[in-house]
Length: 221
Ligand SMILES: Nc1ncnc2c1ncn2[C@@H]1O[C@H](COP(=O)(O)OP(=O)(O)OP(=O)(O)O)[C@@H](O)[C@H]1O
Image 1 (spheres, rainbow, N blue to C red):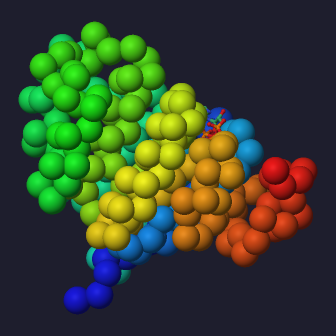
Image 2 (cartoon, rainbow, N blue to C red; image 1 turned 180 degrees about the horizontal axis):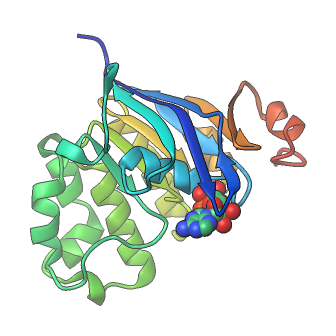
Image 3 (cartoon, helix red, strand yellow; image 1 turned 90 degrees about the vertical axis):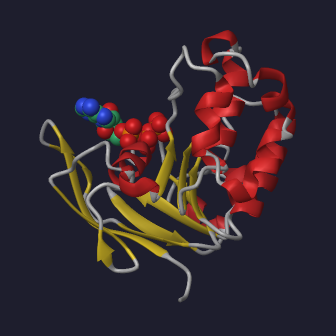
C-alpha cells in the first residue's frame, strides 16, 4: 500500500455571518511536511482545528486514503498541537507521555533533556517555554499518522527551533506533517510544499516570490 493521504476539501466556515474559509483544498501525504501560511486571522488555526475535529464548520469533506473521516482525533489518526497549552496540569509528565508517544520514537523522546529533567514533574511545574517544548515534542513524536502543528516555533529559542525542525524532518519520513507559523523562513526551510490561505482560499505557493505577489510578505529576508 502507498503512503496514507489526508485530504481536506470543500470547507465552509463562517463566524457570525463572516466568511472565513470557503475554497479550501489541503492535502498531506505520509512522508511530507506541508507548510501553511497566511496573515493573522485568515483561518489557519481554524482549518487545523477542523481537520483535527474540534471545530465544526457548516461543511467539510475530510478523508484518509479517500475514506471519509468525521473527526481526525478518532482512533488517534491525527494529532494537533494547538497554539495554547493542552497538557493537563496535575498528571506526571511520564504518565502523560507513555501512552501517547509512538514506540518507534520512544528512545528519541525519552532521551531528550527536557523529558529527562521533568519526567516526574507535573505540567504546572514547568516554565511557559519549557512546557511548550515538551508539548511540541509529545505531539510530533505521537503515534498519529498525521501531525498538525500550530506555531511550534513561536515561543521557543532559536536553538530549540533548529532542533524541532530536525525532529519534524525525521518524523515526516513516516508521517504526514502540516505546520503553520509566522516565522515563515522556518516554514520555508522545513516544508516540502507551501500552501497559503488568502481570502478564504488555499493557494499552492511555488516560490517565495508568490508570497510577495499574494501580499503575505513584502520582501524576502
Ligand atoms: N470562536 C470564534 N468566534 C468568532 N470568531 C472567531 C472564532 N474563532 C476564530 N474566529 C475568527 O476567525 C478568524 C480566523 O481565526 P484563526 O484563529 O483561525 O486565524 P489564524 O489564521 O490562525 O490567525 P493568527 O495567525 O492570528 O493565529 C479570525 O478573524 C477570528 O477572529
